[in-house]
Image (tube, rainbow, N blue to C red; front, side, top):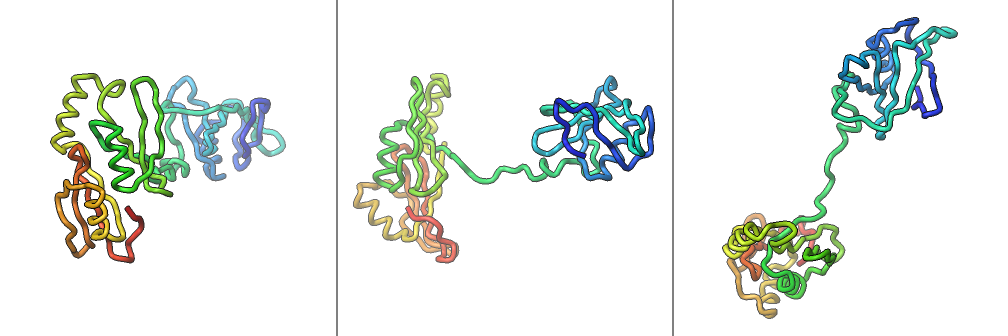
Length: 245
């Protein structure tokens, strides 16, 4: 059974011998035998209607009550429907359509770290840690400023509390928590933690919380950004190394 367009008014439904006033469950059973995923309106006013879910955002409405026998098949009026919402529920024996079963988040795009000053944060993450500026967009008092590792798709939003995201009372509370190091933390990879430790010292970084130490899971160290946010850098076993700070 093909999807109906707005100009189409009829289509053939095979595999049923019902004639005239066909019940929706007979039609539903035939459609599901053909592999269609169905949605059924909850309203009693449309109890003779079914929706075929085409799994690409389109639906086709089947008016079951209009079924008539023609040449050994039952003809039904079909109407194209642009979409559907929570007003319908699944009549499919699968409980959900394959499209919904496959719909998942796929990867991280942007995370954030709260900072007290975006200019100072940009200097630290770019000139000290070796990231690059990704996006810098201003809209009124708001600044969307992100950094990332060169060649990486994941970005870090350097979020400074204030309007329009926060009122002044909330922003003041956030600033206090940031200063205590209670808001954000990050974990980076490096392929040479000990070498990075020396490089950061040469670049003027001094707020280390842990010198490089070897563990069963690799070598790591700890530091804080200028605002107290905790940063850990891990050098995993060679088979797990993926990125370089």
